[in-house]
Image 1: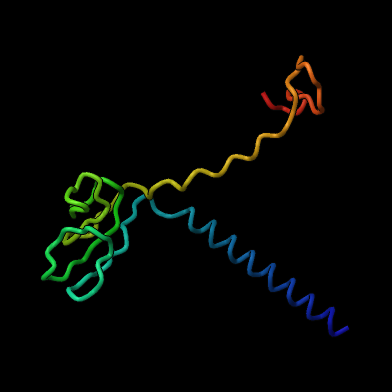
Image 2: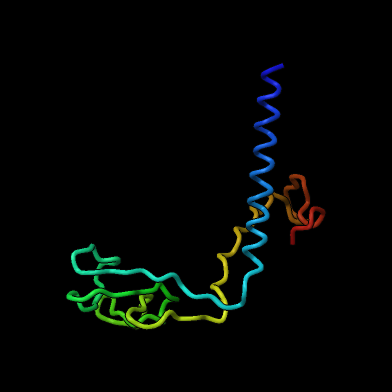
Amino acid sequence: MHHSRIVKNVIAGALLAGSIAATGLAAGVAQADTFSPQPHSWCPGKGLPFPGIGWNMGVCHTWYMVPIGRGNVRLGGSTNDSFVLADVPAPVYDQPPPPPPSPQPPHPFCTPRGGLIIIPPICDEIGVH
């Protein structure tokens, strides 16, 4: 009897945690259309945030990670592909970057109609073209 109560409590806790997480994910999707990257700080004596960064090593910097190509700090000698923006007000962008694409489901094994060897299922019967 005591064991079943523990199991019920564990299941109830898992369901509650899942519903809270789902609510948080749904709330995260319904944000405003603009966003600002989070500020970071660096001062002399700290380790560099990225190797090859080219800024004044004698002063403190407030910096932001921004989309590639929008930075103003040299990385490896050039700002062309920089993603570090430093010593300016926080940038505001129209919308956050898109999430990474979801992985495609694996292609099912099937035989094309009219194939020499027929191994079920036939591709067009299961919606694969």
